[in-house]
Amino acid sequence: LNRWLLTRPCPDCQGMRLRWEALAVRIGERNFGEVSASRLQEFQLWLEHIVKELTKAQEKLVAVVLVELQSRTKSLVQLGLDYLALVQ
Image 1 (tube, rainbow, N blue to C red):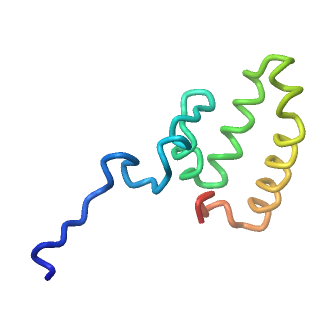
Image 2 (image 1 turned 60 degrees about the horizontal axis):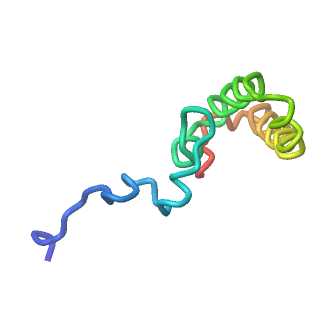
């Protein structure tokens, strides 16, 4: 049976295990799959970078979510879990 099984990434999601709708969402230069595969420390730096690029209108729309993401990420990094990826 093993000789007929192939291990290769899905051509639609490139192994990210997300539907195309989720992969179509882009935040800055990265899609949702790339962001969720980030390690916590990298994600924390990326969030800081994204916040600086937002317009005032965009910032108003996502302010509550950003504060929550930054708070939770900071807590996990302080606990020494910065090596984990968001998908974990």
